Image 1 (cartoon, rainbow, N blue to C red):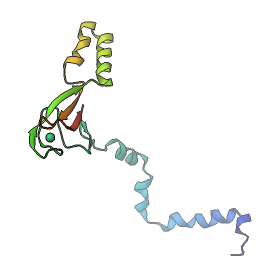
Image 2 (image 1 turned 90 degrees about the vertical axis):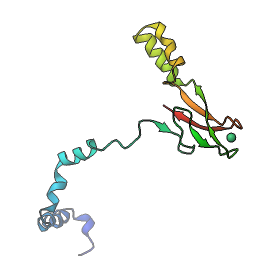
Image 3 (image 1 turned 30 degrees about the horizontal axis):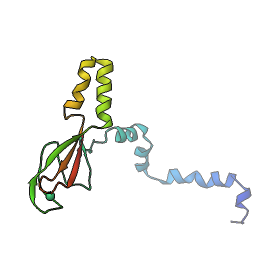
Length: 131
Ligand SMILES: [Zn+2]
């Protein structure tokens, strides 16, 4: 080492060459691009089908028996369905691709609307179930 290595690029190539030969055959799988691709595509879908707000109590699409965090009573939640953007989207799609009389369906059905859970005892908001 003479301290002038920065001005001597060929020396890098000379150092690099013996390294792969010194390694055993374990390195071969890493060079396989197909195996790497399979790892990404085979990732199991661990996400649930529906998204529930994590900070809220676990509530579903139906009235749920739950301990009210506000009045500390065990109650069956009162449901109020909220019209969301998705509701309008469903209606719009039905209107465009099916027939316009069906467009009101999303507004009547609960499938396209978020379910807000309220305590029937004290009326406090408990949580939202999102589709
Ligand atoms: Zn309550």
